[in-house]
Length: 323
Ligand SMILES: [Zn+2]
Ligand SMILES: [Zn+2]
Image (cartoon, rainbow, N blue to C red; front, top):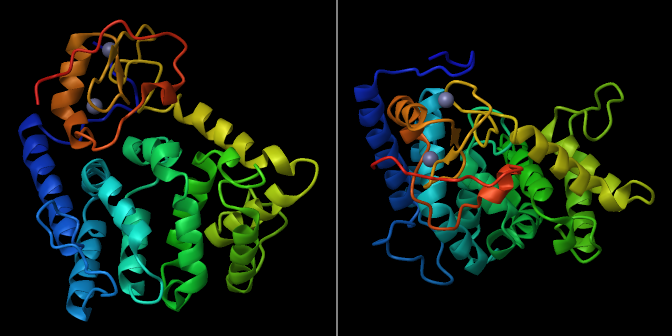
């Protein structure tokens, strides 16, 4: 059986299982510290995280980012699958005035879960979540108003670029129709306020590369929101980027139209759990599961849709491997 050049199991099967368990435990610890575990005491209204709790959660985030890339990504997938829905539900109920630390922490956690637009490896849970009208319609607005109103986001040294990069992903993956002018999933007045807030914080301009060419996350976010407001290309600008991303993503490894393992183009098997990996045969599915896929495949608390993979044909079978 030939392998695709970019299919590279990193560990023996036995170690993959052990690592997966560690990654899930790391995600669970982060959830506990952030009061997101099922048995966690919810933050009483009007009360913020204590300094101790805040520090402990930041330490957990640092521990995650110190892991090797594939492990850190596994933690991001496990956390997103299990806790992102709960996190955003609580985030919606928090107050800028009395719970700024909790809001800051939760948005930092969202920003740490991985890049939903990486071709490989990806976090398919983030992509699904950010595209879901049910779960993410107001998510970009929640993050935008937190950046505007909570000083910690723009204090230095800070994590503003990371937060802006994830917000850009949320804005692009969200449907522009969710916003009041149909040009972005953030309403126009909030967009303008965010741009005003961020403009003075942008690093000096690179050569003239335009909003979609710049590598600086703040500049990219500001630029794209500004372009979206312009006449001409504006109205469809963000949805056009979204379409481009999804097309690229669907030719990446996760959500590929070819077999993840061998590259075979005839794929009939879709992972029944995460719906984001495709295989030509039970043999390839079984091999991928043992060698790699179990690091990124978890039961999600929200629905994972296979339509996002933009597959032309419907799969005929989806035998899950035993987990
Ligand atoms: Zn195959
Ligand atoms: Zn899967």
